[in-house]
Every structure is written in C-alpha cells, then in structure tokens.
Image 1 (cartoon, one colour):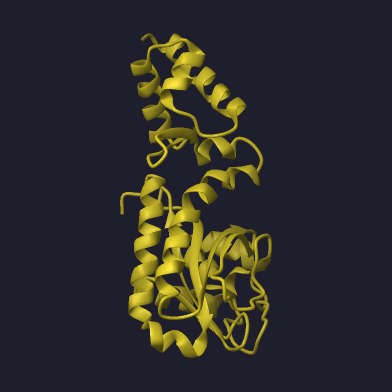
Image 2 (tube, one colour):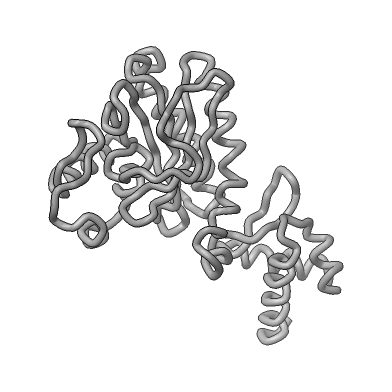
Length: 256
C-alpha cells in the first residue's frame, strides 16, 4: 500500500466513522469502503495508536477517539470518554455502595473549573451540589486537584493567577502557593482528598485519568459523608479508585 492511497483510505475511514456517528465493526467499515478487511484493520490500528480511533473490545466495534474529536467541538470530544468511563464508574459505585453510601463522578478541566460529565448515584443517594453539567472550582474538588497535579507550574499560574483563590467553605487552599503545597502532598499520596471544602459534612477522593502523553484527560472521584471515610478505609477507597483510573488510562494509551 503506497503512502498516497493509504492516506486517502485513512481519511476516507475517518470520514465514514464520523458519518456513521456510532461505533461500528471493522467488517462493516471495510465493506462500506470496499477495501480488504485486513487493510481496514491495519488502518484502524494505526489510528488507534495515535488516539484517532478507539476499539471497544466488549462490543467488537470501532469508534472515533479523543484525538479525532479534538478536531471538532470541545463538547463532542468527551463522547468516547463518557462511553468508556460509564461502565467502569457504575461497577466502582456498585462495589463501594455495599459498605457505604457513595456517589461516583467523572469530570474534566475547563479553565479553572471542573465540568462534570458523569455522576453515578445508587438508588438511595446523597444530596450533592454536583451533577452532570455542573461546574465547581477545580482547586476545591478531589477530581480537579487530581488533574491539576499533572499540570506544569506555568499552566497553574495562567489558570489561577496570583490572587486569592475562591472558597465555598472556610476550608481549602487560599493561594496558589498553598495549592502547590497541597498538590505536592497529594501527588506523593497517589490521590487527592478534600474534606468539607465543597460542602460541609462531605468528603471526596479523586484520581486522574491520563493519556499516552501523561496528560490528565479527566478526574475520577468518589464522594461520601465525611464520617463514612473510616468505614470504607481511605487506603482501600484510593486503591479501588486507582485501579479504575488505571483501567481507563490504559484505554487511552497510557502505559503507566
């Protein structure tokens, strides 16, 4: 396969996947493009290695990856992330709900805020300020700080400046210097922890989901009543979150 026809086929494949609008089998893609199935698999594997395609192994289907969505609107690029993360978060919440009343979240950074894309609640759920589409200050949330810990100092300065940071309760970092110190501590621990910083009486533990370049693409967090932290045991809760985050990070090319 020469370079020019290969490039044409690759672009045709991307265009077809966008037109179909949902994950599709490699066999159907090959038929639509009228190319050998083996050639289609080769193209899909190359696209997957660069983040332009994702293989949903459970469904044996292929869909557009984050890199492809980044060429479109900022909103749409989260669709594959939500599709992959939802069953992982559901499983995590179901497991932890056997021992405590918890809520699971998936959020992404949007400026200095966390934008929540998924909120998984059990039947008897806590009443929280978070929900899908809600924004909260990233420096006060566990999901937000788990992502901020992977940003460089220049990015943090550009995001928060040198002024006083916003607060929702009397607790939480007041300045960028305090935030940096907190991020260093949480990086060493391997997870972010906020207690009473968003809502008094509630705590959250968060871990970042990373891509192949070690960039944080989302934050995965569990929220529960502060008094229930001991019931779940913080180290076990953080380990369960880390396993879920590692699973999702691996799907986006992160090798650990």
